[in-house]
Image (cartoon, rainbow, N blue to C red; front, side, top):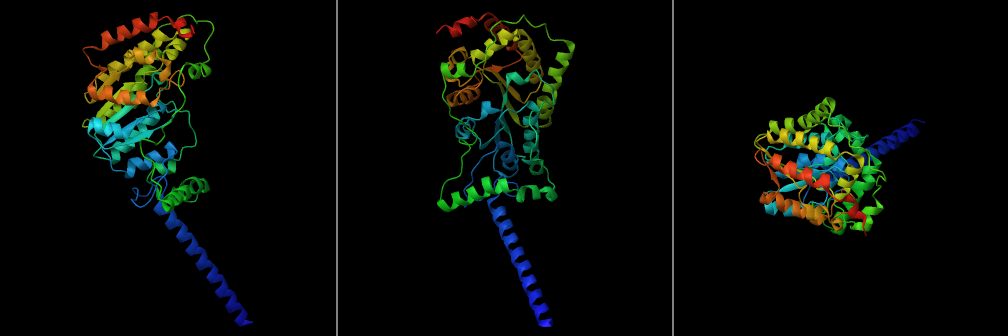
Length: 356
């Protein structure tokens, strides 16, 4: 009887040891292939599949070697860091967030700036459709906040997550074994889709009847716009005076302006833009760009997949414009530029867009 109990104990202990060994092996594999760079910088001998911005970007901020960040919404996804590196003489990473509000972008940048003392250049989209929003606007839920903080105790949600194993660890392992290269930042989050008039129109739900002109910004509207820009841009850039922030208004297509016209919102938007411009021009380390006067680009729907999103060759042009100072807004020229913008879009023949 005693011999049987002894054998049972040995069997039990053997199982426990084997189980622990398997768990430790899996933890080791996870640590090495760390798909979202939460624990360490990328290893040169591992191939990484860069994907899922809201999971990857914080790890990129933490552990990659860079002195410049390209950030923004889907309007920034087609930027190529290789082009930015040459034009600006930097080593850049791309951290974009599709559909993000100003707050999400600002909070991610704040974490990057806090962790990386070498970060001296930021290229940052300022989407026109987000100016007239609450400062805390956020349309996403279920963020992987366990990746954003420095609390090791909640990392179990990362390590023991079957989706991360299936979509991250295992693909990285397979890519490494097959000798495939890692995703580059030029490729990361980028998209190539058909562009042109038919594709823009297919996605454009135009108001048939033009709405009456919206009333001017109310005191509440002014406070909202001011708080939005102040919290999510001004306060951040003022904390890091040694970093240059290249911020630009994204050049949406003429169909976006048509939509605003049909809503009676062009003057309302432009007044909000003017508030934002004045606030940003008070920041000495901000270089503000406005490409709403690139009429040859904006009115050519071959450059767009829908009323907002431009193709990758426009991203390349934007980098060149910024590097050359083309479109720079200053305290000396901002009012003249704004008045010209207002004159153009308030009087444009929008019906001519559809004369085909």
